[in-house]
Image (cartoon, rainbow, N blue to C red; front, side):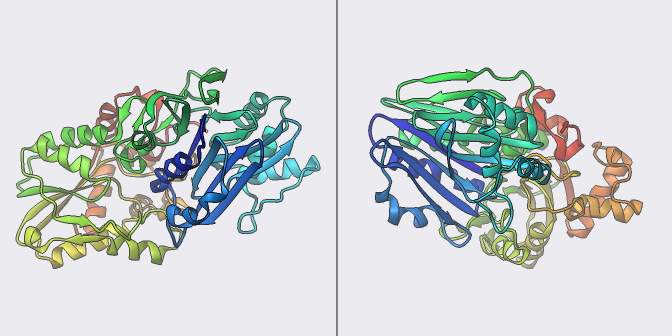
Length: 468
């Protein structure tokens, strides 16, 4: 996925930019970048590979080369960013959180107009550069950003660092968030509002879908009003979002806790206690234990000093290694116990399968798994929160193919909680992963916990409902 941070200040912005960008590190693992602007030196940029190191370690040694009172930073799981452009609109640096599914078609269209691409990423077109080229087709920044909205399929939120402040533009359907923060002498924008508190910013607003604003050191200026329609990604509350962040007025940890509570109230399983799988399963687990009326214990802990999130690495072998190494089971708490474990989701099932094997090796009598979202039936075409290249990488589609002979057959029935097809699929997954029992959250319970109308939330990965 990815996350960005930008700030304009009366004083130097470099320290806040550095730490603010770092607070988005949970959203990506591939590339990091920062750019600042000052009148004396112009634009200053640096991009580093983060696949074998953390953002702070890569950028801190060269931090003194940055200067200025305005800057943008990015943690990216896609292309190298920021891109710096000199155009008829002026000079600007750009970062994006985007997934463009029609990238090849747009590339051909721009090449046919005698445009060229200079910022290749691993030999492929850099999608942030493509977005910049779409922007400069407009007579103004607003017209150019609307051109992006109209041309791309997928999603795109962006920050543009100009010679006159920062322009923030949220995806036209609001699939990804942009929060606005304020403090004395400064404004900031970020994918994650958790980047604000320790930098003394107050989270004052969120951009609406398709809204465009310009950020100055002392004010914000709306350049385009928000759209009415919204399709906010529900999976940010389930997995990707940091617990302290808020989207659309709903705190991530609060949503996970409420969702777990609602699931736990109806669970009559005879167990000793509940445990949340770190990190994103903890909020759900605490709520589940409260709703069910059983103790919560930390039977598994995450070793945080060195192991990052394991979901995003593209190499399956490394993903499996990190998944196993970062979680440490506690034999004293596990042995001879019947435990409900709460986790955010099941994608391929690789990590869960390995974890369950270890739990039984440590003496657990029963492993009851509770998943914070409905089964993932469809790969995401809008954000790309998994490294899946096809639907068949999803364990649900593998099971459907096994049952139906066709991974695309009767998907609506398999996505309907409680249907015979749904229950058969869940039973097969439980057996394959060697679970005592397995239950997924229902879509209705998840939406109720989020607290927004269903029509405002993207649930495409669960039910295939969102339009392209």
